[in-house]
Length: 140
Image (cartoon, rainbow, N blue to C red; front, side, top):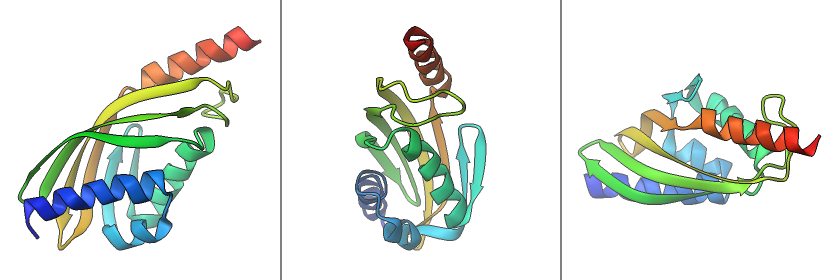
């Protein structure tokens, strides 16, 4: 596949996996042996990824992710993204605050034969947690 094809798969991944919540697309585009290097956790394969995504979506059920820029070269694609939603569920011991959130990050994916085989996500999880803790304390 070309770099352009892989960039198109990233757009599809963001739209279908994150915004439309299509599990079938995860099974289609994520290699069964894929490794994900996420903030604070490493996922291996589809079940681990689905569990990590569910953890985030449980806390932010209306989460939407938008690509802000995509660069592709060969089998690798890196992209900047933003996410926004509302804190409506428990997140690492912080009860739902109803607080709207927005955060940005970057992801680097490696593809093989049209499937994601490895990925790295980086975003400011610490700032998000601090904001939610402050909102929870203000509510109590």
